[in-house]
Image 1 (cartoon, rainbow, N blue to C red):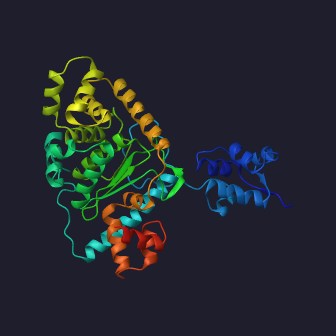
Image 2: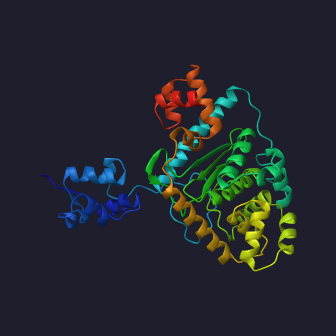
Image 3: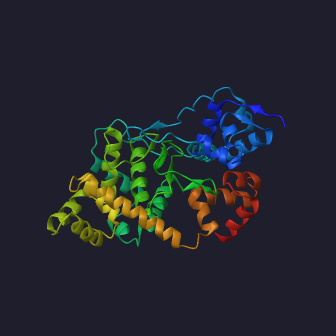
Length: 376
């Protein structure tokens, strides 16, 4: 059979698109011929398999060198010295969200919707974190009592997301690419991004993170909206990036005002861990959110915060492993924004848009759109 001579550099790049190496993909294709494949010598069927494993167009394998790296679509505010490179997963998620956001923006403009005053309200302001967090709560109509009435982190996330969407912000939360459960998003790559559009602002939250952490990420991305920034975030606990650090302060104040926190902290006894537990019970918030608030106020070390985050992630993974799986129709609106999913499904059923268009927007099939609308 004919043997193709392909660029080893291009093959290595292709393998990296799925977080793999050339050697690893070569072993998957043929253990006996792995060394030959690593030299760039593949039969046409092997090359086809390689492109499928790497998830890239077949023709890309014939390039003499890897294609130019795609430009980042948003400002990169990730704060690690050497952040994980943005992968194909990120770009596919971004393209999907941007597609939805563009459709929704066109819809709003056709309906003569007014721009949202809070987007970029503090873009050129010297207001402090307390002032901005207070305005965020005011716009979202969110109170301490409502926050502390939630049973767990997922309920709190859903409360803030619903309030945000009622104010005009689309909230997407997904831990995979589209509906592909085999392509789990990397938390080390990014935790969220925000598009600060005056008509159709969008926040995407990486749902692969622990629920308690996604609450803080949502508050953090809301802060970016209020100061008018479209960015990719990793929401690092300790950041030298001025804007990321400021948004962390706003998010912490938004979830738990400093004056109330400091008062209870001062009255509590015991070491830092004991105080965090006491405040968790007092404010009915997760240990992670309490630890994050304490860190922003320099009451605990970054090391203790990171330990609590790791424990939170481990507990979330165990809970997920013990669960029997989710309801597709309950997950669909979370992945695609509750507000947008309801709008699209209603328009499709009423004949205002085609069922195929609706299905394409929601990454599903027409039957599921109809079924979702019926269940709603």
